[in-house]
Length: 92
Picture 1 (cartoon, rainbow, N blue to C red):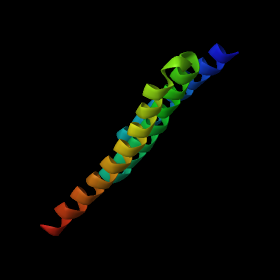
Picture 2 (cartoon, one colour; picture 1 turned 60 degrees about the vertical axis):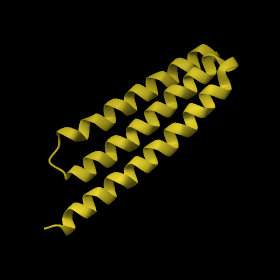
Picture 3 (cartoon, rainbow, N blue to C red; picture 1 turned 180 degrees about the vertical axis):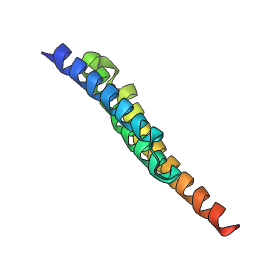
């Protein structure tokens, strides 16, 4: 049962990764594309790490650190990208 749930988490993570990549082909703004990519990438990566946590529970400290790092890193990166894009507009 745990193996099946683990593989479901892996599959959900891959779906999120592809779902976040798909808007890159659209005609929206770059910020919309980056936002959708970063949110889907974060959710997909977290889902995959949860799947790993179910598969190898003895490594929970390392995997918990990976989950926290993913959440913080991708959030901070989103803010940095938004700040840089707003600063670029002020130079015009």
